[in-house]
Image (tube, rainbow, N blue to C red):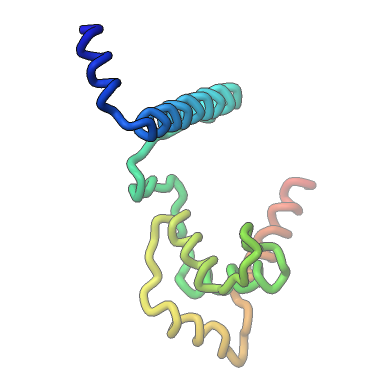
Length: 146
């Protein structure tokens, strides 16, 4: 077996050995990173690491009970307040943020641009959902303080 290995080694190109060494180094680094991730997540109470194939979305435990217009209104308000920003520093659009919320709540808003236009073009009551959130929050505070 040793003789076969030596014969193969003589026939291999030097760059092949360099490539194999680099790949093994990368694999070692990946293993160390995974160990750190697992150690970090198991230290946190209730946190676990879920490994899924790439492109496979995790089903969210959250459920959106409002309307599509309510979600669009909420996202627009969060963006107008500057509460939501892009980590990469690129210009963020309302559609980008809506897509994140769709993933979070495992929903799909059909005809997004039409619905967004209707939400932005309201004449009489421009923020019914945000107004109801404010009332609900104040009622909850009053109940807790009573």
